[in-house]
Amino acid sequence: MGPHVHDPRTGEILESDIIWYHNVMNLLRNWFFIQTAAINPDARSVKFRNEIMGRLIRFVSAHEVGHTLGLPHNMGSSSAYPVESLRDPEFTKRMGTAPSIMDYARFNYVAQPGDGDVGLMPNIGPYDKWSIMYGYKVIPEADDYEDERLTLNSWITERADDPIYRFGRQRFRPTDPSAQTEDIGDNSMKASEYGIANLKRIVPNLIEWTAEEAKDFKDLNELYNNVLGQFRRYLGHVTANIGGIYEFNKTYDENDVIYTHVPKERQEEAMAFLQKHIFETPEWAIDQDILRRIEEDGNMERIRRLQEGALNLLLNPDRLNRVIENQTLNGAQAYSLTELFTDVRSSVFTEILNGGNIDTYRRNLQRTTVDVMAGLMKNQRNEFENSDIQAVARGNLKVILEAARNYSNQQDELSAFHIQDLAERIDMILDPR
Image (cartoon, rainbow, N blue to C red; front, side):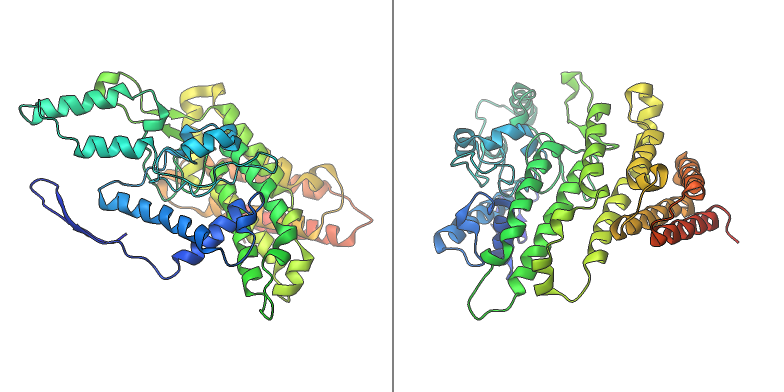
């Protein structure tokens, strides 16, 4: 979207431009392929038919025209639809993937094989039509600005309890899990579970679906990395629930709160998802048939970076301080900082705590987790250094160190060496020399 010129006295838009970047069609190809190819034959190639690409371009164009009319991104729109509704052909054909095309709702990655002819794309929705009415409808009966403002407010309060008309602001790192970019549905864990199921269906078919006579494997490489990028998005959507705070804007006359903490059960659901999908090695993403066509090495570091990114996002100090504040305000009803760290520790260091061999991916994950906890202890920002974060990080490192010292494995020499090294690393973090 390009700049627009408006009259500062009235807000009237006098002129506007839409700038179409050179790579938009490639972005659309990648998004539509990765998010729908598991159920959509039209997306199973590196070049789409003109009718398909034309429909994708129409979607982006409509979104950008919305900006020229003054509409901002509404990242809270897509959470109005229950996840299971996105598997319903009648509902999705009628309602699209979100009530607003101004969300980054993209395409229907929730729908599963066997669901039928589901709708795959966002459309201009009821929120968009309502916004245009709010911004542009003439109110001839209003005598002055105050009369007009009261009429506009009555339109808002009439729809206050309908999530279809909710606005959720855009943030770089969202604290509200119901207002995120690139997500759809009202439950990040359910939607992402369906999304990962579809990624698992796409990966074994990537070589076939990207094949072109006399071409190299450039598209295979690009789309494989887009699969992992989509997986990373799902991890981010889920993590936002931990330490999350819902923001539902209200007017004074609604007499209701704006901010509420995400319920403990929902945060525990998010942690269970992370334990299953990223703290356990995502074996489905390691396809040797693909890897041997796109690189000579790099797979182990790729998986480690995925896990490191998830850990850094989860153990972000701002998030952890929100967890502490929730516990302070709500006591046992909150998902506590100690529960969070215990859940991470029990799933990442399972072999050390319970015995057993430790494979390469798990060794990398354990070292990375220790590094991330060490980073928390080195953070000197006052609001973090003087919170409970460093105390809990230190306490957990001590628990891991004690378990490492008690670990015994005579069958796997590499696991034993890893444990010795891990103990030395933790010892130096706790007692720098």
